[in-house]
Image (cartoon, rainbow, N blue to C red):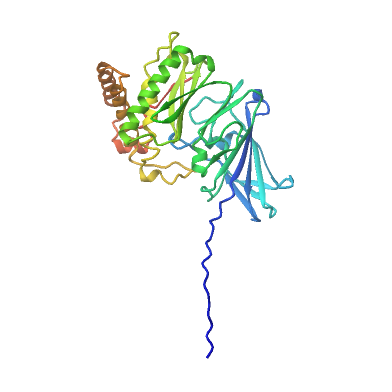
Length: 384
């Protein structure tokens, strides 16, 4: 009888790192107010590639249809040959790949609107949110990304993504990429250390960040961060950025939008600070509200809000908790950190109660949440 001896050798299997989507953002002519974006997708011989832009931004709670700002869409293979494409729906493009391993989609994006979740180019400055410019491949939201910038001479980049200079900046997945607020151009950039982490303050236009404003801004941001970090055992980020647009056009718009490692705030000059650098009444509550969202909403969110569906609105009866509790603890932060007096705290509470009591339609908290009306203090907007 023969015996067959079989040796089983365990060979470790190395997990293959997904190929990143490679983006390039440029501004060939600032006067045209157009970002030019290219996105290189691994196609691996697929017959077609289906790519989309989000219709909304998490935290903004309203459909924006970012694809409406897209101009001159096109696609090509690795040899630069044009590929046929068509629209699958209002924010989705279908590209016939010709079995190419790599497909590059590119387009211009009109950036001419003042808004918390839209892109804008004004002179030697530009800003955008990842949802505005970055296409994603359907059902491939976990794919990593790299972003590079080609910008006019003398322009800088400040973004929530990891990286430096003109790039590459990296994101672990599309959710991180989509959430990244970015400034490009010429603006003021300051930084400080809070609880062992870097906090940056980016303000446009640069001359709005006077010496007096700098002193007040740094003090307020440090007190807010220390107080709210203390509630949760420390900061949940490697670095954090307060992005600020100071508006000097005759437009009544003020508010803020939270992100996982930043906040983006817009204020008219008069509401931002006076000539002596003293803040307007809404400044401190706005920054403390948006910072608290780092914890409540960005890391603790209603189950209905995750995973994100970038094509459609997502409804939850708990928006009152996401925004109301955030607002309450932001006010507590202001008094606990010494940024408000007891009188200011009580006056603000009275104003909040009056606002609720004077509502034209007495909705329940759940009804107000589903209608998207609970985001009451983070955004205040009027007609131009």
